[in-house]
Length: 268
Ligand SMILES: [Zn+2]
Image (cartoon, rainbow, N blue to C red):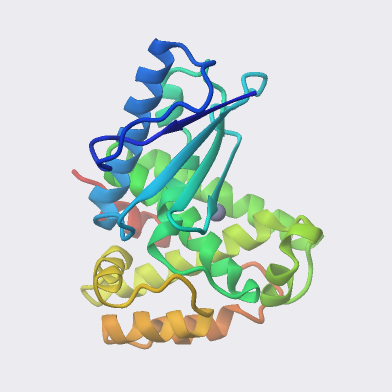
């Protein structure tokens, strides 16, 4: 295993630091190109990164099949995004992997209380595909397919991870309830974004205003909903939150709802 530590110079005025030399020069070029692509796709969709500086740490795991099998945000100073990757993967394979978009999307909302973790993970899970669509990494048809498939996996996992959403979120790691938590949260944001778009607003517009005025490192789910409602001059966040946090079932999201957001975020 080797560590490589990259900072896309396009975004961060810091030198690239290689912690351990086990990655070839052509791989470094490929990885930096990919990180720059990911940061650009996310910032074009969600606005400038809210943090003055972030660090991206790459951990090479060549034995793995997937390009980026694991990612996490480490909340410190500066905030760090840590990604495990298979450095053999090609540039198009890296670009098609959702992990980088997901982890960077986490940086636009606060770290919430554990029972509200479904909001943190739902936001990043929804935004990973919104970013890929908005940046033409995937088209509207692929967006609808990937989101629909994710929702099916979330629904299947709900039977194995029963209980109220807030309780299951609070104990997500021990219960291995990731798919239920991530995709119920994504369903929440699809539902809310449908309501916002019909009111001339959108999740992305709310985030742009929120990161300007109100983003804090930590918050609670209910406080975040109140902040979002105030920004959007609506009640849809708190109203929908109340429908979701105690629920034991998986929400029904229609193809029409997924298609509405796909049309909104597609560039053509
Ligand atoms: Zn996440």
